[in-house]
Length: 162
Image 1 (cartoon, helix red, strand yellow):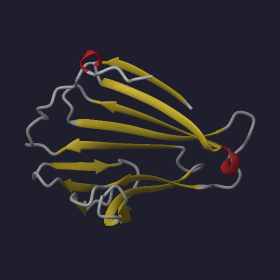
Image 2 (tube, one colour; image 1 turned 90 degrees about the horizontal axis):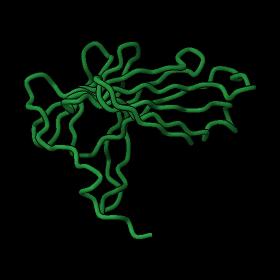
Image 3 (tube, rainbow, N blue to C red; image 1 turned 60 degrees about the horizontal axis):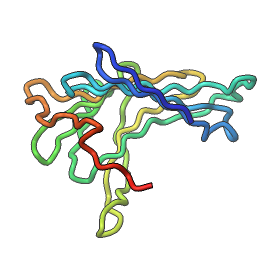
Image 4 (cartoon, one colour; image 1 turned 45 degrees about the horizontal axis):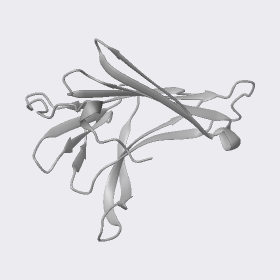
């Protein structure tokens, strides 16, 4: 696994990759996340690439999944390229992909003290050869106030006991 971080006028970008799909599919999955300076947009790109020296056999199906908390209400956008998310507070967000359909599917929420709960997930389906790069955005709906929380700095956290 590799990870790197960069800051520029578009915001903060974290890029990480893993090789969990190498043995079965010969693929490395890399994700780049960019948070805008105002905190209103999280842009992502998921990249599926062949391991150096190997070719992708066939055209493996890939899915980028966004598991939603059970209290988040989700509805499909009319254009099929996104979903609108409404938080319990009433704040709205949209998750969209400019080149792919975004669908809603059933999921299970396992972090509840009361056991598993039914939930939903937003999913972008593609194939590794047909779409080695999948771009998406999670954006606060227009008219919604900007987030009020400021990002903490490292000095504000207690040191971890080692």
